[in-house]
Length: 113
Length: 111
Image (cartoon, rainbow over all chains, first blue to last red; front, side, top):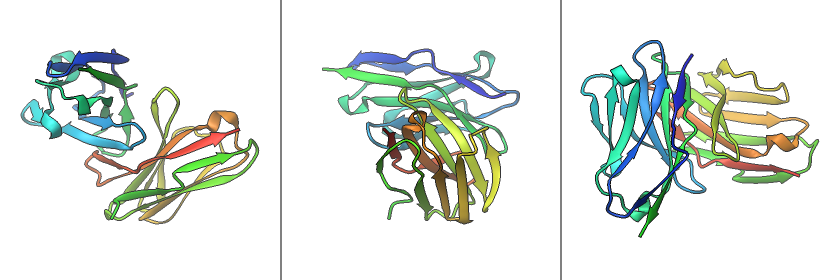
């Protein structure tokens, strides 16, 4: 069965500092992997996705993520965090049929001045 | 035009009542979903429809009944509301690439 683990419930970083949000998944085959961001009171917005090919994927807002099959991980990174990045971040995995997406529990990012 | 729109955005009601949430998408996607987000922000898939046919039902109580009159609409009707139904309900669509497009959510509060 698919599952997604985000080990950090919340993370606080200083504005301008680098960020890494962790995500581990469990899936029998090569999954489709995603990161979404949710601002307060809003729906989720796609940051980036991995289907196949280059294991380092670039997304919107300066985010990137690296797929590591050996570690079953898909960690999200940003070299310099802005105050507007404060939000909830969700890692997700979709089966290769594309119909069922399972989300991690989310990581809340706080940015301090 | 909003790609995925849900109404109402807020819903406050008493236990035991019946309520509906509507969802419409203008992306032309075949697959639509309902997700429930609880107070701890955990997102759980409830239902999925593909071209008006139910393809996923994640052991949701029978009090929840989705209806898809056409592939652009997926409504959620909830009977006999309980306190535990309080949550934010998100409608979403996909073009079967796995990428989900979400509505802004409907916050349901059951008193």
